[in-house]
Structures are given as C-alpha cells and as structure tokens.
Amino acid sequence: MSDAGFVSASTIAAPASAMDYVRLMKPRVMSLVVFTAFVGMIAAPAAMNPVAAACAVLAVALGSGAAGALNMWYDADIDAKMARTVSRPVPAGLIRPDEARSFGLIMSALSVTLMALAATPLAAVLLAFSIFFYAVVYTMWLKRSTAQNIVIGGAAGAFPPVIGWAAATGDVSIDAWLLFGLIFLWTPPHFWALSLWTSKEYARVGVPMLPVTRGAAETRRQILVYTLIVTPFALLPLATGLGGAIYGVVAVLGGAAFIWNAFRVFFSRAGDADAPADIGRAKAMFGVSIFYLFALFAALLVERVLPLHFPLTGGA
Amino acid sequence: MLDKGQIKDWDGGPEKPVAATVPVAGVAGVLSGAGEGVPTGERVTLTDAQVSARKRRGQWIALALFAFVILIFVLTMAKVGGNIANWGTAFE
View 1 (cartoon, each protein chain N blue to C red):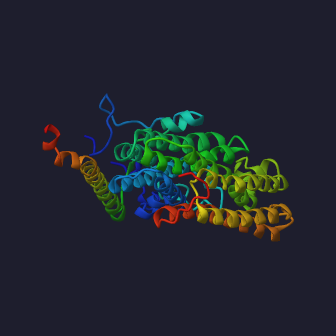
View 2: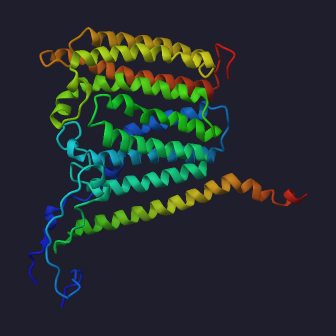
C-alpha cells in the first residue's frame, strides 16, 4: 500500500505536557478567582463542613479553569497574532483547539456537579452562569463587538465571592452583592491600564478595546472616573458591618494610592504613540490595582479568620 | 484487503478523499465543530515519543477520574456520615 495517505509524524505538534493543560486554565486568573471566592465563603455568616468547603473551593477553581480553556479555544485566532498571547498552548500548537474546547466543556460539567454536591444548588447555578458569562457573553460576543466589553464582561470575574457566599449560606445577601460590585467596578480601570500599552496589538487583531476605539486620552479619563467611583464604593462594607476597622484602614490607604495613580495616568500621555516614556505610569496603575483588590479581600479574610473583626457600625 | 485502521466505504472500496465542508460562520459554526473530522483517507503514524505521551495522558485522565470518584465518596461521607452513624437514634 502507498504511504501517500500518511501524515508524517514530524508535521504533528509536540505532545502537550501536563503543564500545558495547567496553562490552558489560566492559573494566575484562577488564583485570584479562588481567593475572592474563598473570602466570600469565609465572610458569609454561616459555617461550612470543612470537607464540603474544600470541595466548593476546588469546584470554583475547576470552573475558572474551564472558562479559561474555553476562552483560549475561541480566541486562538487572535492570540496567535499578539506577542502577549502567542505562546499560549493553543496558538503555540501544543493543544488542539477542539481538544481545548472539550477540556473546557468537561471541566465545566465536573465543576458545576461538584459544587452542587458539595455546597448548595444556588452556588452551582451561579458557577454555571459565571462560566457561561465569561465564555459566551464576554469571549464570544462582547469582546469583539463593543468597547464596553470589559465593563459588562467584568461581571464574570465579579461572581466568585457571590458563589462562595452562596455556597456557605444558600442565599445571597446585600454584603455578597457589595463584593460583586467592588470587583465589577474595579475591573475597567484595572484592565484599561493594561490596554494602554497593548492597544496596538488589539487594534491589529480587530478587538475594539477602549484605547482602540476612543483613543488613549479618553481611556485615561475613563480610568480616573471608574477609580473615583470604585474607591468610595469600597467603603460601603464598613456601613453594613461586613468590613471592620482593619478593612477600613486598608480601603482608605489603598484607595488613596489607587486614586493617586489614576491621577498620574490622567495627567500623563500614557498610551500615546509619541510618549513611550509615560507608559510606566499605566504599568504602575495596573500593579497598584491588583494590590488594591488583593489587600481589600485579604483584610476581610484576616478579620474573620484571626478573628480581628471590629465593626464600625452595628452590623454583622 | 484493507490494511488495519483503513476506513471502508459501504461499497467495500477504500474511502475517497472528500472536499472540505464549507465552514459555518459564527458561534454556531465553532460550537458544532463544522469542518472537523472530515475523512480524507489520511492516517497518522506516531513516533515512539508521541505514543508514550498519549499513554501518559491516558494514565493522567484515568487518575483524575479515579480521584474524582474518591472525592465524591469522601464528600458524601462527610455530609451524610453523621446521619448514618445516628441511624438508630432516628427511630427512638
């Protein structure tokens, strides 16, 4: 028989390693998702069986990984054209796109099933919805169609503390929605700071990020506006009693640093083609935004775990 | 006679390469996997490294499935174990 029908083994990409599958799940995003979900679970006014709580956290991690895999599968075409994402497992040829899709779908089913068994039906429904929101609403629809993609799509990243809260209590209170709102309002200035120095690549692949559609100056203005909204919003948990004195100190000091950096970006020319030196301010803003959100949630965790929760009002 | 692994048509002849299907646009296209799995008559020969990588991946999947089963068992015991232990007292 002729060998004409055979594909040479050399044309097949090198086999993917276990690490490639870990990278497919966006481990850095997953760590922040797990952390905020865990804080939501701990801050909720209900105790969970430790084994069930561990399984619920694992379910959130798997769900986050599933959403990341589905995102990498769908975005493989544009990831292959951007320097920041070209080495991801799918565009690098390490994992086939259909394999990434199957991996994401199976992981989604496993994570939601595990959450339903470990915690509450509401937590499982919220987890399923957040995976759907990130993979379909944000990745497949909003990302390539509107400059408000990250504003609306930010809801996907805001769900984890609500899921954690629902896993512990079986319902969702105003405090859980405050944590949701905090991440939701934090996402635009955080991501737009990043997009100020990646906008050329987004423009090349046709993704309508704000700097691409409205320009760097408007992006700097929007970063400042959202920062001036999210920093006072972050003080609301003090009014409900969710956050105590430690949280208050972190929210005030972190908020001041966040606002300071937003003004530095606003008064700079970061993102303008003829001002490459100013991009450092956008990078500083990006770093501070991550630290700010992490510090707020870490404060809530410390107050509940140690416990050092000294409410400034008569709340929980 | 066909070689092992060769695909047969209904009439007994070797399968002929077929033209690629027209991709379905948009989300429906990618979700349905249109354009994938079109039989072309091509076959793949794997190197020893690729065969061993495939075997390793199979073992990881088996291990993950086993771990998931154990996890569900432990979770079930943790959640309802107390009720089983108190089975007798339920009728007192």
